[in-house]
Amino acid sequence: MPRRPFRVTALTATMRTVSARHPAAARAVVLGLAVLTGSRVWSAQHAAEAARRSWGEVRTVWVVDRPVGRGGPVVTRAEQYPVAVVPPDAIDEPPEGARAARRLIAGTVLEGDDLLGDGTVPEGWVVLAVPVDGAPPVVDGDPVSLFAPDRSLCDGVVHAISTNAVSGSIAVAVPPSCAASAVTALVDRSVVLARRIVDPVDD
Image (cartoon, rainbow, N blue to C red):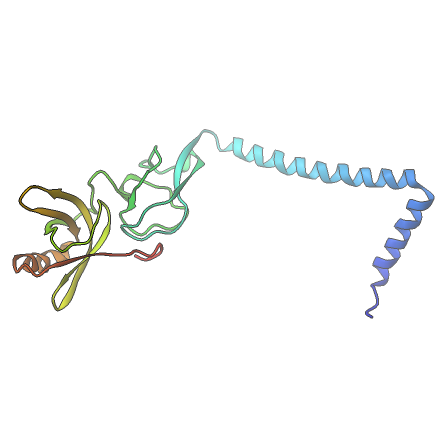
C-alpha cells in the first residue's frame, strides 16, 4: 500500500490529540475557521455589490442566449447592463417570436436591426412573389430556398403570405444577387420553393 505523506499524517494525529485532551480549544479553533471563512465570503459579496454600484444607472437589455443563423428563431434572456455600455438602439421589450436578420452569437445585446420582425427584411434585399402552389407550409420569417430545375438559386426569408379566391402567393425576400435569376425562373414558371431547416449556428 502507498504510504501516506508524513506531514498530513502527523497533522491529523496532532489535531486528534488536541481534540481529545482539550475539546474546548478544538471547538474554538473550528469556530475561528468558520468565522474566517464567513468573513471572506462576506467580503467577496460586498466587493461584488460595490462593483455593481460603481456602474451607476443600469438598464435591462435582451441578450442572445444561444447562437442562431439568419432566419432562425432568436432565444433571449434579460440582463442588467450599465447604461454607459448599452448600444443606443438596444431593444426595450422581449422579442417574442423574432427571427434573426443575420448570424448572431451568444451574448449579443439585441438591437432593432438584428431581427426580422414586423415585415422587415435585410437592407438591400428584394421581395418577390412566389406562387403558393407546390410550396410547403411556411409562416412569416421562415428561412427558405429557391430552386430552378437544374440548379439552386439562393436562400431567402418569407416576408408575407397572401391568398385570395383565385390564387395565392408567398412574398419571399432574397439577396439582390439572386433577384434576376429568380425572376427568370418565375416567368418560366419553373421556380420551386423549399423550406430550409436552419442549424442554430449555421449562417
